[in-house]
Amino acid sequence: MAKKTIQRFLPDHNKIKQIKTLRIFGRLLHDANLWHLNRRSARGAFSVGLFFAFIPVPFQMILSAAVAIPLRVNLPLSIALVWITNPLTMAPIFYFSYLVGTLVLGHPQQEFYFEPSWQWLSDSLSTIGPAFLIGSVICGAFASLVGFVVIDYLWCRSVRKAWQTRR
Image (cartoon, rainbow, N blue to C red; front, side, top):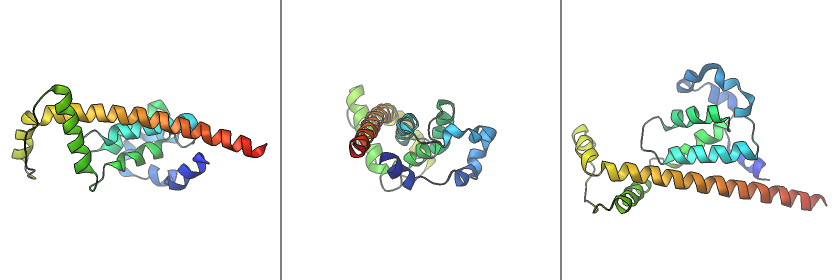
């Protein structure tokens, strides 16, 4: 059940192989384990994808793929999960990461107003940057761990339910 549900939302592996930015991985994309969906590959892909969804860097998909390939977890799933942080969800997720960072570092929260300029970016890296980056790593690690445990539990539950149905 879990496998069929996940596979329904995954893109075709041939389409992913055609993404120009992923061509840097060359023949590594031909490993069959990257496209196979089982318990190990699904929980690993959730961990990788959820971690990089919280990391505020450009090219999150490439970083997710770069980690998924040597770990031999499901590549389409790990890339797709990065899109949890999309233009609609990015602001609340990153603000929450900033709040976690201020809590962990013990810094007071600072008011800031976003401006789409390089000057604002360079100024904010020294003021809110450390709390934001630490909070992003902590939230990413926590989401990664929760994703791993939840997918593992749901997968096992699905298998148990299928066995009970067969009886």
